[in-house]
Length: 389
Image (cartoon, rainbow, N blue to C red; front, side, top):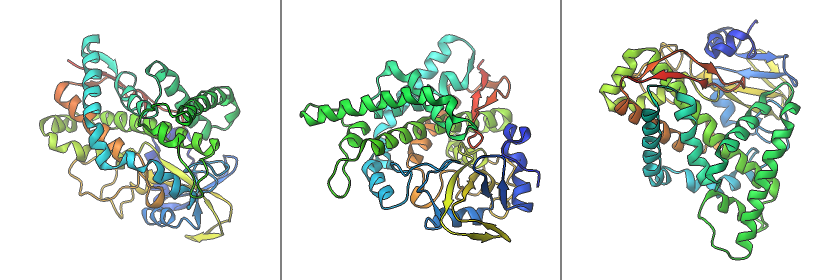
């Protein structure tokens, strides 16, 4: 079939190919990437694959290339143990503890927007700084390093899906050097008994394996990188995608402004309709035959969350953004043991962002569709010009 994740029309709008995949090619082989990979798109197939971690393994990474097992991006038991190290920082109870911080920061950003004038970029002036400031604070990154921090986060994602990741090597080495120094400094402070902040960096720096040995540098750095990327890039895209769709149809925006009770529904429908992560990869441990197609062992398989979220067998009228849709579980945060650790934080930040913007800037209007972010397996707006009156 003609579908390709790299086709210009699919890069412009990934949903353009979802129905073709769902109806005509539920198991698709993409030979344009090295290594070639398969794609699963139907809701039932995606659900089964995410639950069957023995067949669809994460041991060699969740990106399109095979990588060494590191940090939480691997299979249990290592994944389970390392996830527990940081799990307490992302529970709903923990989110309530940072609600006031997110509330205040959102107001500060809107104050700055209002002071600067009626036209602004929703990405640069709002959706980017909100989550990156929060996760950087949790990782002990100084405020003056935020711009570099965000740049390095973007680089990690770009390299993951690039045809030639070597073009990002210098930036990746700079980031690795920064985070290594960051980690070592905290470990030295802990070793000499210095007072250290009760943050994620301290928790990871002082983490141990079940045998009592200190988590090695590679695993610790992998965890810090995953939290960095997951804690800002995806939430930024959730906020831009959500505002883009609501403002694209002014009646939807007016409905949310008139009824704050629709905020949670808007966030969940945005996650279903425009998932910031279109899909992540697994690695087959055996031959799998599905819909008369055999996926060989040791193949990369793209688990297509976005297509599963448009499966009409589960979501009636899937291509309609519906604020009153009956709530069903979308796949945008994954499922099972690898369910997105930061889901509660992403939801909290997006809900507060929408509630504050709708309350304080109800006359917000879209000034164009902006442009999408580059990685083919992610979906968000790199620029989104808007205006308030």
